[in-house]
Each structure stands twice: as structure tokens, then as C-alpha cells.
Length: 437
Image (cartoon, rainbow, N blue to C red; front, side, top):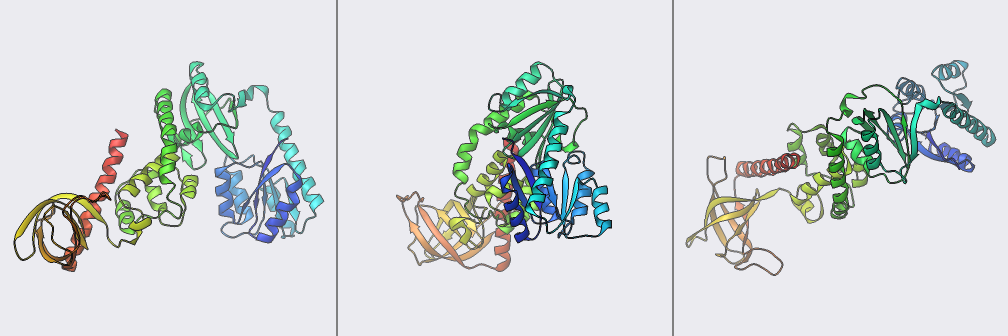
């Protein structure tokens, strides 16, 4: 049985639920948008077969939504039924002139809405069935021929056209020019990211249509098909491990503000910049994957890097008020008895961990002197030993001492914190560069 997709744009929760209940006897999947802006976003994520549109909504009203949809070639053919309490003839004329199939006045009876919806969907099916035979060059199921095989076939036969794919309410398209992938779009993703997402679709439909054009500029692809496929397969192989590692992020994903602000001050690739913006504690991991312009592998790779560098407010790290970083620098320390030397430490604005077998007991006050690379003046502070062990512990902690600063100027604390943040950000960007190379 055919299963149609309907987008219901309705800001009143009770009315939305009533409409969903009325349509339950039809073979439809109903998605609800609470305002006009959300309706446009949901259309971009998965193109519906019909939109039921309230005229009076926050953000954007129904007329503005209809105008935006009809002005976009990618959405202009989606049928619209206005469903509203606005009874003026002028409003009805305005809705129909915008291209709506129908204009119904609330309250509407169940029998009427079912009949109107069924008629519009049947007309839409009839129009598709009456399309010229040559408009569809090939079609089938992804279960029979997946996207990797389709790319191979179309490249071998040097085919041109737009390959449209649908899977579980998601839609995407790839333009082929003489067998070469020229551009790709899938929801918020464009270019290579869109291809990587669709390579994972194992169930759904595909259809190759005879089309022309270059597609959106941001969706252009220059990488050869085989290179794109090899990279896509590699990412698919690594996804299960990344998903398992990131399963611990069971709540909103948030970068420490000092890292987030520091990254946003830098020049970042578009998708990476968007991800950093969205790691503000307002979205879960699944929501980030849904709305980001990056593919899932890229998102999880970045987050895994953030997690390993303790840049996410997660677990025990979330309790810290300042960042810290292991670094190799020369320093001196003594307990007012004799100086000792060490070359390896973790440093933050609140204290440090010295990797050394020459330790002092907990509670001992010590004087510390050290230099940080790129900073001309040396640092001198008094600290108190809060943990120490002369040997590596069974828990995996190295021999050394944890020292909490008890006397360090505020300006020095700021300097150390800025030093740690910049080194961590440099490390993140270095890993990104190495990954691309």
C-alpha cells in the first residue's frame, strides 16, 4: 500500500493532534511543524507529498511559507491545502493565487478533510504517472542495487541525469554528467557530505531522471567517483566504532565556553564552524547529526577529538573550572629544603601535576619556578601538595605530585589559562589538517 508523507503546519497543539487523529485511517505519515519557519526546515529535511498549512502561525505565517515554497524550484510542485480560521474571501483568493490546491475553513469535519486530502494525493500520483516515459531513465530499490553499485554502473555507462533517492522519509539527489558525480544534496548537507550520508542507505527507492543544470554552487563535487567511493566506504567502516565511543554523550553536547569562543575566533571550514556553534548545550548528539551540514562520520570524529582533549563539559571533566594540558617544559621546585628538577607536567591556572619520582608528602608547601614556551617571563608560585606517589599506581597514574597553587597572581592565572587554551586549539586544528592530508 502507498504510504504518503504529509507535513502539518499547525501551532495549536490540540488542533494538530485532532488533525493527526482524523488522518489516521489514511495510509499516511504525518509530521507536525509548530511554526512557519520550522515547516520550511522540515521540508528541506524530507520533502512531503502534501502540506496542510495553517494561515496564522508564529515566525512565518502560512502565506509566507507558501510563497517561499512556490518560489523554490525544488519545492514548487508540493501540493498545499490551507487549513485556517480566516474566512475572508480575500484570504482565500490570496491562498489560491499562491498555488494552493484547496482552502478549507476551520472547524472542518473528518469526512471532508479525508476526502480533500485523498483527492489531492490521487491527483498528484496521476500527474507523476502521466509524466513522459523518457523522463525516468531507470528506477528501482536500494535493497536490490545500493548507491555504491549505482555509481559504478552510471560511471561505466557514462550516464547523465539526476539520481533521486528516498529512504525512510529522507530524500537526496546526485547529478551525474557523463558518469561523473557533479553535485549532491541531502537535507542540510551538500557536496561530498551528502554522498557519504546516502552511501549508508540500505533501504529505499531510486530513480534516474533526465535533467540539466549545475546545481547549487556549494554542492559541487570535484573528487573523482572512485576516490569518493573509497573514502565513503572507509567512513562507513569506522562509524560503528565512533558510535560506540560517543555513546557516553547521553545529554546535551557542550564545549567549554572558553574553547568554543577560542575556536570561533579562528577561521574554520564552514561545516566545522557550524558544529562548534551548535555545541552550546542546547542539542543532543542525535540532534546534531540530524541538523548539521556535516556527515555523521565527520561530526563524531570532531566530537571524539574534543572528548579526548577534555574540551567537552562531560563527566568528571565538567566539574573543572579551568582547562589543563600536559606539556614538556623545564621547571624547578623545592620544599624550602632543597631544589629538585622535572621536565614533564600538566599545568592549569589552578595548579599542576609534576611527573617525578622525587615527591613530597601531602600537605607540604613548595616553591615552584617554571617557564612556558613563547612567554618571556618565568613563573614563580607557592603551592601545596594535594596528592603524591613515588611510583606508578595500579590505577595507571604516573609517579608524581599534584600541586594546588596557593599564591599566584590573578594576571598570571589568566596568562597560563590563555596558554593552555591556545595550545589545545592548535592541537585540534593540527589533527584536522593531518586528517585531510
